[in-house]
Image 1 (tube, rainbow, N blue to C red):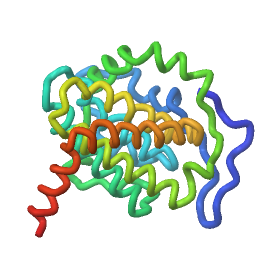
Image 2 (image 1 turned 90 degrees about the horizontal axis):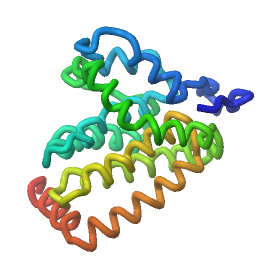
Image 3 (image 1 turned 90 degrees about the vertical axis):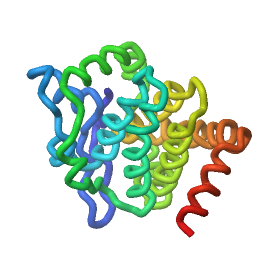
Length: 218
């Protein structure tokens, strides 16, 4: 993906932007034993601004498995973890040990990347670091986290034929975080709100799920 000519000026107390675009990061999945397991903790340990994007990219893999319930059961909790941490202002993911010591096999990543290679190539000329005000400030960071939570809940609900739809939407969130592209993030916000209104509230499932969880907590 395109790299900025100059680093984005850092906020006070924060490091300057370091290019960790999608093509650079995916190079880590290219070579090696297909049976090797890529541990999440190891993948994320040296990343800076792109850590949430990489975590989200890996977390959505099960959403593209064509088996009902698998995407929501596996991807849903991971995306809730990502969204919750962003909502509460964390700038880097915190991983419980049992998650840090797990991850996909390299061969699984290869197959996934082969399936999305064509749209990635098309996006390659479009994505670039821009509109940092829609990514860096805490309110924007938190809004992204909240919308990830809502889309993760929709992914977990038994709404027919939506795994790929929500999976693709979450993939665009991951790309916006990876490429620091505020324009794409703005489009993601609009798309996520539309999905929540259409699939969640219009069907009543999101409301009933929320009421059920509140009753369980209290």
